[in-house]
Image (tube, rainbow, N blue to C red):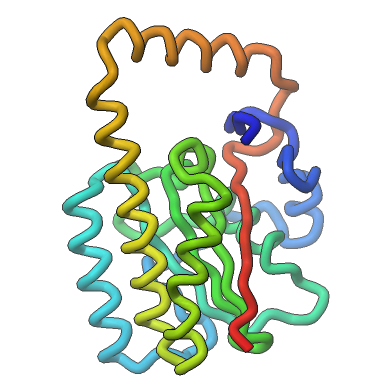
Length: 210
């Protein structure tokens, strides 16, 4: 997977840029909750259970931002475009400084088409591969088929947290010299990237439930 830098002009995967997103959706910042149910689909109990699960994950991974968006998307709006825009313009309440958007794992559910996808901030993307994201979506498929949307989101988060645990163990095993070498290589790679429009970028995967 090619490194993604937060100062890149556009997404390396699809070429979509923050400039295109701003032209379509505007450039204003929007306030979001961790579980932003714009479709009003989740029952209060489901939302409470999901928020409790996110609380637990945030204790375990204090740097990461776990959030979800449920909406009824119009036909002319791609879920990948929405995820890209939310990563750049969404501000999750209570996560202003401790958990920046570049550390975000954003799950989007389009309740109109019954599709689900994942958008990642550039830091989260450095830890989670495309295969990891696909497996997390497949793990949640039974929940989606049974219309258990809160449980599906929790399943995706927990599956990706297992990935983060494995990555963390590998990083802890690296010597100080190896970590310095990796940091130096990353800095050298990002120096050659073009001037930026976007503060962060994300990779996208999606799965249709039915």
